[in-house]
Image 1 (cartoon, rainbow, N blue to C red):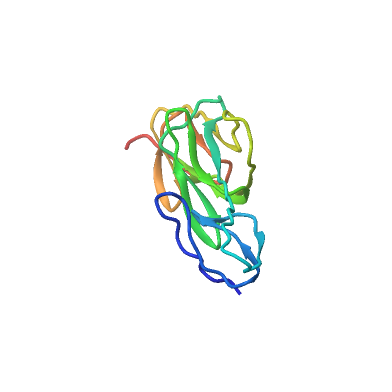
Image 2: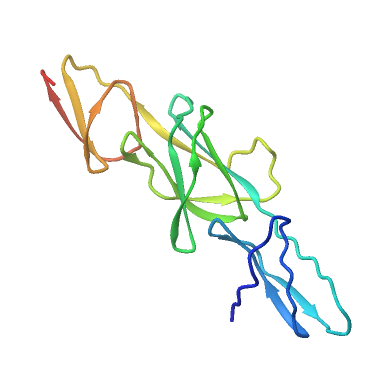
Length: 178
């Protein structure tokens, strides 16, 4: 049975008074969980047991098919059955956050088109410039002397050529006026 051992203070620690026996500890952060650590408390004297749990920086990039980073895109992930926001992409197209290592379904949208959920493996100990996953939206070009609109993500959206879209089936309409 799981018991809540508490929330860490400003110094990142929790102090517990434990009876002699073997315990399994794990930490939860931003919906992600650490590996379990087994600790045996003997109870023979006051013991200080240090258990470290380390997160790692998860980095996901969003770009178009010409390798141009796409800023202002929200990257989401699912953990513990709940949707969380990893972050919003900056000018470099990268969204990042500290998570525990693991595989999480992640997704984003570009111009109302959905990337679909992709399993992304977040690995501890990677190089600082390592990108865990890159979402690539296809740059679509259409030439028409009027207005082009498409239906995606529950909305009727104006198409401005060229425009990045994730693969999918979209209904386009072409009209000579607005």
